[in-house]
Picture 1 (cartoon, helix red, strand yellow):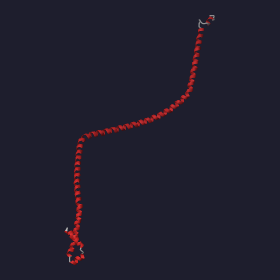
Picture 2: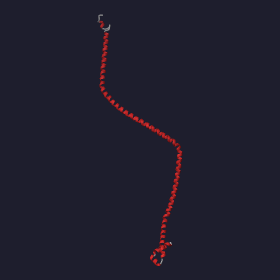
Picture 3: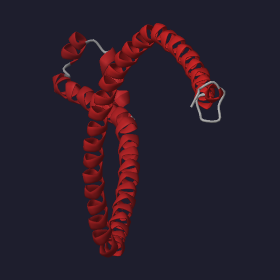
Picture 4: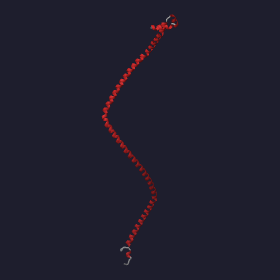
Length: 196
């Protein structure tokens, strides 16, 4: 405090009056005292900033170390668990994966066979479509022929009726011939007229 007081007093005194009074030795000490007082003030200001910053840095570094330590512990637990899982699953996974691969290969070959069969069915359906179109044309022709056959059927009916008439006429002729035959027999009607 005494140095502050003397620096304030010395700053209030005029430098020319101090030279006149013969105080040249104190004059050379005055800038050093001012420098020292300014340094002490700035050091106090820096102490107010640096010490809390150092404390916060220490706290944060301790917390970071704590987090990194727990992270490494968790990673070691995860590594151990993965190792345990790999040792417990690996003996059974190999054969099952081999069976799965075989099943997938069989399924792929079956799908290929199904694809070939579907392609063959597609070709057969195209052939059937062409055949159905041909049948449709043939049915149209048959329908046209049936329309031309209707007059022929009518003519056949007329021929049938004429044949029945002929059959009836032939039957009546047969009866007449039979009766004539009976008349020419030795006991018939004409034998009475003959002189023999």
